[in-house]
Length: 300
Image (cartoon, rainbow, N blue to C red; front, side, top):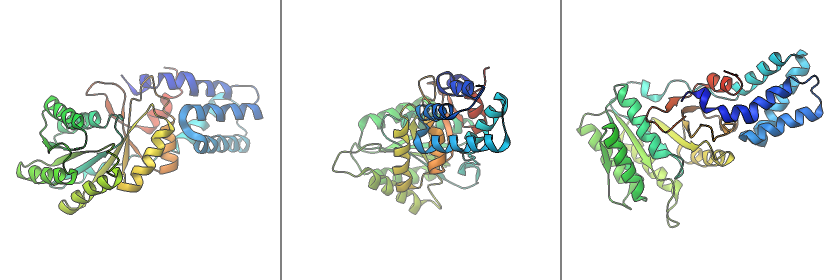
């Protein structure tokens, strides 16, 4: 599946209708209200939808735009301006060991994303190792171990309910001992009430920071593309706790609205690094802001 195909529902249900409104003979107050409402329904959220509508409206008035092509082009430019350029990943900086922390709530596709990232980076020549630091959920460790077998990457795991920081420390020792250079750390997405999720994440973060120079080099937050504004709230909490450097949006297929990507960019200033557009091991692709925005409108 391509990015364009994955956006079919979002395109047909929301942004295609907005484009049709922009082709109306007159953009009156009701039309602008309808455009803003559709943007909210597409999961941009009230703050971001209002910003987009007001920015577009002001530009239309100032520049005297009248044709659908002009209006649609201006909307695409407005949306694109909300998306931070991803820029190079920390992996592109030479170092002996690179550490990538992957965070997110259970059910977001976090562990599956790690497996797909391991596959991608291994194929790019990295000597990858995985750390099963989500020690509070037996299924998470088992799932990561299955992914390790599937993509032929070693997994360091500890005891169920054990110390996540200790697993991270053991994995750092192991990656050095085995001459590997890229450690991807899975972390807890939900804990029993007697534990504090963010404190546990900070512990893992600090273990990496103390044992590897400038680690973690990337902290990727995985969010489920079908959860809408809930994903934005998740991103806020995780960003405050562990200095998230980028976002991975999963399930960006025919069931997702996709607009929350703009809210994440606008309200948090975080770049989207990868998007999941299917279930296959290859269906995690680098995020291209322009291709994403174009895919919301183009007919073919």
